[in-house]
Image (cartoon, rainbow, N blue to C red; front, side, top):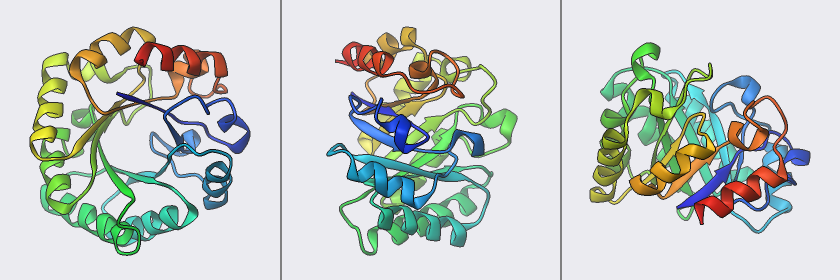
Length: 228
């Protein structure tokens, strides 16, 4: 299991370098808010670790999402991550396919991450269970669950160990990796290790509990030690 930590700036990224994957996002613009391409490039230049970039919690805008995905790949991201902030399998399949094609067209070695939300019912968006087969069919590399509304409720408030284990196991049967995130706490690491996703994503945990605070190097090191 790898630890993905999400700094919001080049300066903050310096405190996240112990993580396995450095994830570039802009928390003020949403759960998977997109940062600037020059920030992605600057963080890529400061580490040998894989760099992930969120491109947004996208409405049904396959053209916009595909162009954003291509831009993130060109800026240096090794993982390009998009959230599906809408409902409908047909629409989701179209947007996922467009994002995968945009990245793999010139960067076949890069990883496409498709995210749905654990709190999909209150957001009226596609469920993770419905999203994952679409991601696998389109050739994405990772199916992810996050929380879309950041109000203190976390992943385990919406999905239990059994449901998350089923999601992870089903993804494995489709040859797609699993990433789990969503206001995770240190106490969640043990059950996450039991579930066994390839990646867990954190921000608030390593900011001292408030995702709007700065990433703390000591908490990143604590999290990576617990994951190990």
